[in-house]
Image 1 (cartoon, helix red, strand yellow):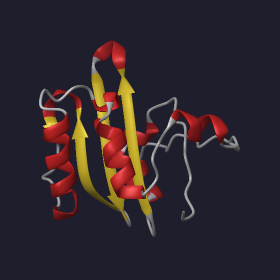
Image 2 (cartoon, rainbow, N blue to C red):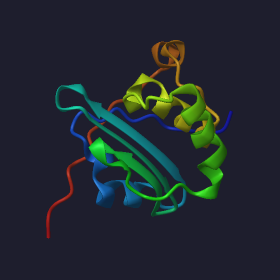
Image 3 (cartoon, rainbow, N blue to C red):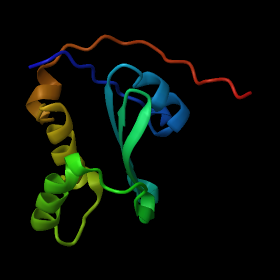
Length: 124
């Protein structure tokens, strides 16, 4: 397994495109967020400062599907023909495909986490 970082983001900065593109410079960033009370789900894949794929809210795909995800999206369509909420399985397949890490309850419960605060960017 390669080096990776998991960030828990209670303030939705992981859906702020200015923040995630900056954080992804020189690396790959995958961000998934779900707000059940408003039926809002978001998924982003950024690569070296560029958003490669975005899926969110009621809009579905916010950007076209890149070639690297065509087979995974076909598998998602096969497994989830009714397209449930992202957090009900769809996002986990995308995370696994893009990071080679299977996000399981055991992985999260068995990991050691370091805590810190990322300040919200100032608006210019």
